[in-house]
Image: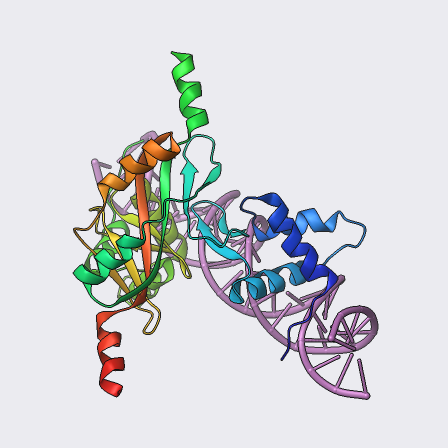
Length: 132
Length: 132
DNA sequence: GTGCCTGCAAAGACTTTGCAGCACT
DNA sequence: AGTGCTGCAAAGTCTTTGCAGGCAC
C-alpha cells in the first residue's frame, strides 16, 4: 500500500493548518462542504484518522467536544478556559523531565505525556477584574 | 432539589469503588446488569453524571477510550501501557508547582491540570527483557 | 403526599463501513 | 492499468431524553 495525495486530503490538512487551532471533525467538514468542490463526511473522518495515524496531525481529547485535531506536532500543553470555553496552546513549556521522574518513581518506560490545564484564561480574568 | 439515595445510585458507586480502577460507563452497566436487581442503562449514565457533578467520583478522559470513572478523588496522574492497554494510577506525584509555573508564563488562573502518560508498564517491560 | 428517581424505548450525536465508480501514480 | 480514494447512504456505537410509574423522605 502506498500513500496517495488527493485534492480532498490536501484540503483537509490545509484547513487544519490554517485554523492554527483545534478543530473537531465536524468543523473541518463544515468548512470544506461550503467550497466549490464539496466533500463527503466519510472522507473527512477517514482522512483525519489517516493523518493522525501517520503522525501528520495530532489528536487531542477536548473535555467537552470529544476529539479535536491540531497541526502543531511539537510537544505542547493545552489549556481550557472554564469561563469562555476556548482552548489554548501552551507552547515551550513541555516538562520533559517529568517523564524521567515518573520512570524513576513508577517504573516502566515513559514515551510521552499529555497534560491539560483548566482555569480562567488571561482575557476572562481581566474582564472579571474590570467588573469590580 | 434535594439529593436522594437509592439502591441503584449506591450500587453504581460501590462498583466504581470496588474496581479500584477506571471503568467506562458501559463497564459499570455490564457489571450491574448481571445482578439480581437489574438496572437500566439510562440510570447508569444519569448517575455517573450526577456523581461526577457532585464531586463524589472523578471523570478522566482517556486519550483513546473516552471518559472513564474513578473513585479516587486525590489529585493523581494516569498511565496507559501501550503494550497491555492497562491503565494505572500514579499516586503522590502531582506537580502542584506546574500550575504556578503556567500561571506565571501563560497568565490567567490555573485551577488544576490532568496529565496522562503513555509508555510501557513495569510488567510488560520485564517480559520484554526476559525474551531476550 | 411530593418530588426526585427509575426503566424502557425512542431519539440524538457522532463515527464507521459497504459498495460502486473515480482518480492518482 | 491497477490500486487506493471518494461519495453516498446505511449501519453502528455511545449517550441523552420523554414519559409513565415507583420509591425515598
